Amino acid sequence: MLRAKGYEVVTIIGNEAAKLVLDLCPGWNLFIVGHCGPNEAREEIVSWLKTKFPAVPILALNPPTTLVLHGADYNVKHDDKLWLPLVARALGRPSAA
Image 1 (cartoon, rainbow, N blue to C red):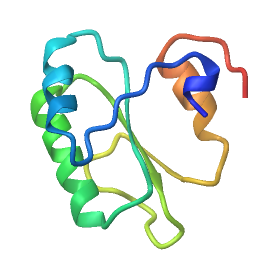
Image 2 (spheres, rainbow, N blue to C red):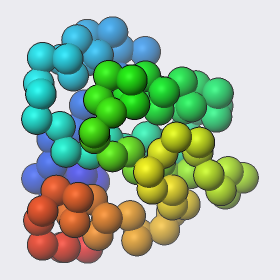
Image 3 (cartoon, rainbow, N blue to C red):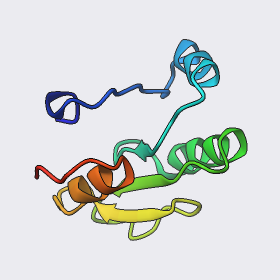
Image 4 (cartoon, rainbow, N blue to C red):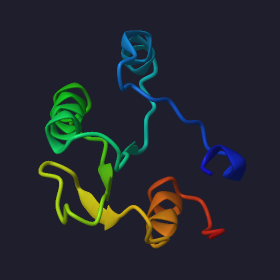
């Protein structure tokens, strides 16, 4: 969905090469942690991102059973389309939700 709106998307889940790419590109504006996977893995991703990129905000898309992913700057339900304007705002783009 984000690619269709013109955003670049990189996933790091189980992808060591993607983690290297993140290190090579200093201009990240926002990280989004998806709703799939166990919370422990998602919290590990947030912790890794906060350590490597402390100034970049993190938006957590959460399943219905999780209200807050600790360490994330923004927490929303994954099926709530209110997160799309948050992304646009964080990236300085007009909202096209």
